[in-house]
Each structure stands twice: as structure tokens, then as C-alpha cells.
Length: 433
Ligand code: PLP
Image (cartoon, rainbow, N blue to C red; front, top):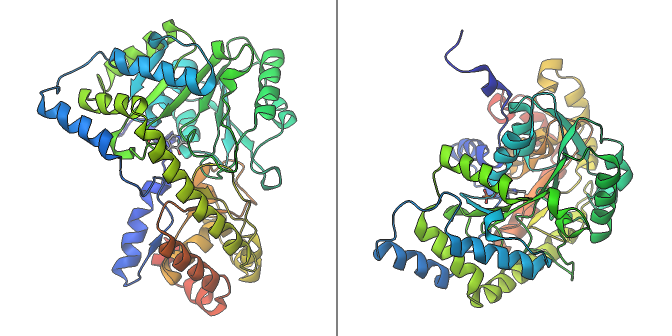
């Protein structure tokens, strides 16, 4: 018997949040750090949205609300889903949550019994794998490949679907790759789900980056494919597209009102409700036409940065980097650098125990942070299972252009710093051991 319940041991984490400890440690050693780790827009929420929040607090709108969310916001969400996806959903299928993240846990709690299989993208948002193992489900990673633009093929998915598959997690545009799933792929996925999966399989469609796409790519939801609205949970929110991460405002559309009522019950059991003044500000974000201008400006800034960072990274010997069509991340392949700096050899010489907790890309990431002052996130932070042999880092370009230029210059320097990597091998703090 221990103090802590056993199930907690099976829970993972999101290193993009935890990496702050290492950044602080590097800074305490006197390293100036450029951060490419943050998964949030560097823009503030818009004044017209902020004002509604302030006015509501001052007017005393500070009490509990309907745990499902205030009806006007649920109606505005349904109208947004109709406008952007052409789908008719009722306000009673909508649940308002404190961010898009809680919906992941709610889906696992609602649909996954121990032993049920959950397919999820890998690399993918780490909270998927974390919740599958926490709930005693069987994790089934669907590996995304660089050569497919970090999408997957319908055949690759089909091979993973069994009678036990209960939940299929999709994410487009993707964290961490910025890759997108085209209408064509999603219609193929829908066809496979309809023809091969058990009728009780639910699709969880994480669309939190729906507003951030480039080069004319149009966001498409699998719920738009025939027969899919009835079995898909659309999860999104205001965090990324409206630069409202700290407001904690997410929404989900459930396949039907009964399942929405269940999620309302989960809200009652956990958070009770999202604060009313935040919900009113969220409604303003949906309904005020100024929001579209703000989003357009932010996305065009992200595009400029993407258009700088992708060629700049590809220009570094040992890196290949896809040009993503969404989100604000790039996911460069650093295997050439791992070979050039003999990181692979160093890794192969580690004990099995240490190898199990790290990877060549992780070692390069730590080396860049402690010896070259540039913080990125490693591939293993986006799903450990099936990550072996994949040598990638995630770079969030949600930061100013000067920092991007400086950070890329530091990566370039680190990529050929043989002497520095030798020193790093004896530096237990930097190694994290
Ligand atoms: N889903 C994905 C794919 C994300 O990248 C994130 C945030 O990084 C979330 C969900 C969580 O969003 P929120 O901050 O609204 O909880």
C-alpha cells in the first residue's frame, strides 16, 4: 500500500509545459535561451473580446452557470459549426469546457473500458497517449510519416482497426507537425470507419487549430463526411485561433444530445462550469465580425514566419523540414545531425535503462538547450510508443521574427559543434541524469 493510487503511474504528461524547469536550470547556469517550446500564439486576446469579459465582471456576472455552458454561447457555437462545416447541430449537443484539453479526458472516460483499443496519431498531442494508458485502454499509435506530409494513408489506418477499437483520435491541423488531413483522406477514413469498424466506435476530431491554415488549405472535419456526424466528437475552442489560451475556453459537439448530457454530468462532477464572464467573452469572439480580421492578421504573421523558418532550417546541413499547411509548428528531421555529431553512437553506448528514457533527438534537444541556448521539444514528447528510430524536434514559431532568426542561427551552430557535444556527454545536469 502506498500513498498514491496505482493508476497515477500510468499517466503521462505534456513536456512543453514541463520543459520550463530545464529552461530555468539552463538560465541559472548563465545561458540565454530562445524559446521555441510554447504551444500558444504570442498575440494577446483582442480588445473587443477583453472588454466584454471586463464589463461582465463589473456587472456582477460572476456566478455559476448551466454546467453545459450558457445557452447563447452554445447557440453561437452551433452557428459557428454550421458556418464553417455546413453541419446542423443543436445547442444541446454542445458542451462548454475549460479549454479543449478536458474533452480528451472526457472522451476516454465516456467511451473507453479497460482493454478497449484507442488509435491515436504518433507523433501526436501527448495527452492522448497519457489518457489511454491512465484509463487502462490499449494504446494503438498510428505513426505519421514525414514523407506523407505527416498525414497517414487510409490503408495504414485500416490495418489498425479491430473489433476492439473503441475510439479513433484525429488531429488536423496537427500538433506537433503542423500537418493537415485533406478532405480526400478524411473521406477515405470515414469510408473505412463505416465499413470496417464496430458501430460503437467514436471518432474524436481535435480541431483546435481549425483557424490556422495556410496556402488556401481549407479545414475539413471528418464530421462532414456522410454518416460521420452521428459518431464524431468535434473538439475545439478559442485557445489557438483566437489567441485565448489563458482564458480556458473550449467547446465540444457531441454526436447526440444524450452523450452531451453525459458530458454535462462530467462537468458537474469536476469543474461545475466555465466562468460566466469568460463564456460571454467567448460569445463575443464568435459573434463580432472584428474577430475575423484579428484571426486573419495573426495567421498572415504565422505564414511569414513559416515561410522564413522552413527554408532556413532546410539550409542547415543534417536537417530536412516539411512545409506544413497548418498550426504554428514545424517538425524538422534531425537524423542527419544525430549522425554527424555521432549522437547515434553515443546513444547506442548507453545502458538499456537510460536508452529507454531518452533518444538521439532528445539528447540533441538537451544539447541545444544547455550549450546553445535554444529550446525545442523532442519527438518522444509527442507519444513514446513507436517513437523509436524517429529523430525529430518540434519548433513552435509562435514567437517574434528576431527570436526566430536568432534561434535558427543557434541551431545551425549547435549542428556542427563536435567539441561541445563531447563536453555535454560528461555533463549530468545537461543530460538530465
Ligand atoms: N489539442 C491539441 C492538439 C493541442 O495542441 C492543444 C494545446 O496545445 C490542446 C488540445 C489543448 O488546448 P486548450 O489549451 O484549449 O486546452
